Amino acid sequence: MLEVKNLHKSFGENEVLKGIDFSVKKGEVVAILGSSGSGKTTLLRCISFLERADSGTISLDGFEKDMTELTRREVRMLRMKMGFVFQEYNLFRNKTAFQNVTEGLRIAQKIPADKARETAVNVLKKVGMLERADYYPDELSGGQKQRVAIARAIALSPKVILFDEPTSALDPELTGEVLEVMKMLASEGTTMAVVTHEMGFARDVASRVVFMDGGKITDNRAPAEFFSSPESDAARRFLRRMTSDRGI
Amino acid sequence: MSERLLDILTSSFPKLLLACIKVTIPLTAIVFALSLILGFLLALVQILDIKVLKQLARVYIWIFRGTPLLVQLYIVFFGLPSIGITLDAFPAAIIAFSLNSAAYNAETIRSAIMSVPAGQLEAGYMVGLGYGQIMRRIVLPQAARVAFPTLSNSVISLTKDTSLVASITVVELFKTAQQIAAVYFEPFALYCEAALIYLLLNTLLTFLQSYLEKRLVWKYSAEKKRRKKKGALA
Picture 1 (tube, rainbow over the protein chains, first blue to last red):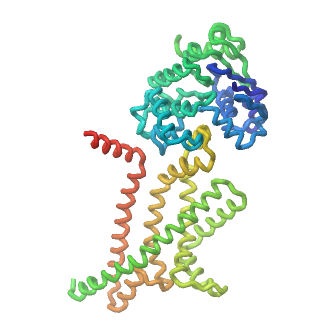
Picture 2 (picture 1 turned 90 degrees about the horizontal axis):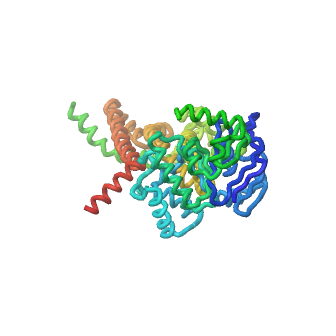
Picture 3 (picture 1 turned 90 degrees about the vertical axis):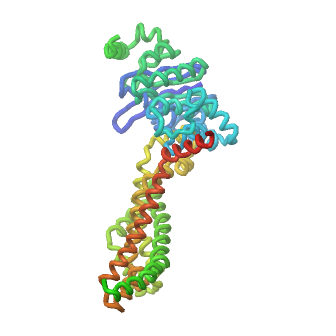
């Protein structure tokens, strides 16, 4: 479904991604874990071309090419096969929840208004935000905003949805409603790559865990194996820290 | 107050008001429209980072913000004829004011566009929009709201600055006051009366600004719309 090979990215002197091979199969939920600064977010941002990769190839839904040689049109075509959920939601502030969902449908996919409306109603209902359809982002709580952002992503029926720490900006009591929605999507077979610090989500929902350390993938296995016997020392240290922090 | 002074004031008031409506307001409106367009273009070439044009815009802004408006007005009206470009006073005023005001508006608009978080652009890309579409539909509407109070400020300044064109023979509000004052030897009363009319005009503009500003806040207009909807249901 989605695969990147030998992905490199530096910011100035700082090499953030040191040759990443990463893939998501159809229907898979891949949790990407790692300490801050390990390159998780940069990986997602390179895959979605929000950052230009220095080298690497991408293949998505049958299309394969060197990431540095993509034309603007190819980038746009690939992006239309992806959904992206941002840590900071990034809902269009001048549009209502409903308009946030229909924007891509109407303008990018050129779907007629009545069809777009139908889709928007469906996805907003799905994330439990239909009764807030006419509200602007400034009128919504963080959890509500993120649910609308998820609705905006799934409305475009992407092949894969990339989540960049979707609950990290939320108050702890609001993370649950967002995780519930993500769990529901996972159970429906949505293909997802999720950068997260939610260990519970990685353990219970993900079909695979990828652990990153210092710009490399050091662990790549089923959640049960990862949590019981992590491969790398870095992952072991990370898990010890995560569990002791939470007093578990 | 003497009866004579009262007579002068009441008979001059309609004349001043007329000059305000016929010259000051149109001058302000035309200059504002032109300077908004030019200012937007100057901001855009900088935001889009277009080589050469971007540098030219910076030089333009540097010159027009760095020299006095009155001097610019004199250069256009009294100076240009000596190199063969002779303009009537009103068009000369429009040109000098628009060029000057555009330099300020460019900075206002540029900073307003830059104040829209990069995440808005990124989210636009990820729903499949192109740069132009995102600019038009997402970024500029948000930037407009940010720029609005500062641009309102510039309109209010402009109404007052138009009094400078009295010095290049345009008979607007202030020039009319000067003429009447000269006839009756009542400068104090007439200039105060002129000041009052500027104040009235700007009071109206201030009301207009706060009215429009409220309507520009999406949250506010949404609440109002919903209240109306509820009202219709009840």
